[in-house]
Length: 417
Image 1 (cartoon, rainbow, N blue to C red):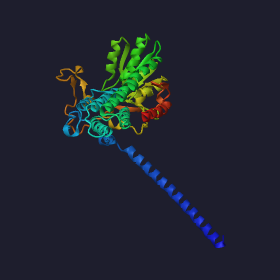
Image 2: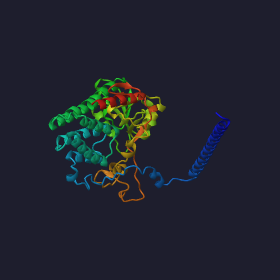
Image 3: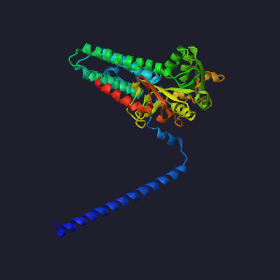
Image 4: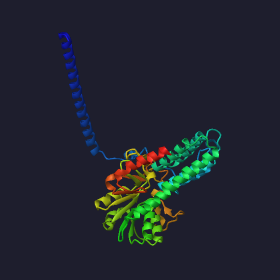
């Protein structure tokens, strides 16, 4: 290299260094400015009182549910080819007759079976079946958003249709999807899985235990019944909350079986927790980071149990496991709004001189027409992994940190089918 070339080379390097230093200084200045702005905003917000409109603007993304609207309103069934069983299920979903992730998943699979059996194939089976199912799914989802396990069920059915042997006749293809896929999934992944979980969950219950459970869970009910059948002497504390009061259904079934029970609302939890030895909870979804999505109030129960050093046992089959994290769950934000009528209702037996026709009194009878009143009640919450002691699945008793491993295996099985 000549002297001139060296000089130009070193000058260019010097310029680059200066530019880098300038950019670093400008970035630092920008960070300082943003920090100052944030501090000013925080100080301003401290002095500002939130109004109801500000509070509900946070939840404006949630779907508003209006129970007075018919599910069939404005839909021409002839054009969209909506199956009659899909319409019936949609009505049950929207009115809250079918509740619980497991029950909704089973109903969805049964509807898929009806749709596939009654399908009139004109073109290729795979294409026709997928388009027909997509129409039915879009119709149902419009009136009650699906939970994450229900999306898992849809994926399994669709993947099975796409991977079906093209040499099969239409009748053979229908039989394969309905019997081999749908019926086998219901039997192995739901019914058999729940029986296995109930057997494993019963092993943790000992004589003299006081078991706390919240609301109503299908698997927890099976565990408690099996433990009573095995002549284990224990007591159950059923914690409940308004407006669904699902714990009452569990209380009735356990009382009929002769199981000793105590019933209380969520506000008495801290007082009743003193005598509890174990907490058994169901789940709507288990997320990849170990967090639990369940009926709202579950996180409060789990946190209180942690405060009293009581183990929290979550019971759920693996089809409820989801790849999503707690920040990505649509279940929280979309299927979150409670039926307005049930939120405002008060049992009429507590009110004197009540002329209510349906057994309930409504403090605000014109709540639908009142523009100043906004009703907000969530259905689900997320319980962090720190408050969960163990997860009971059909594969055994696992720590919540092992959830991603189960999801990986479930995904392999999904792709292999």
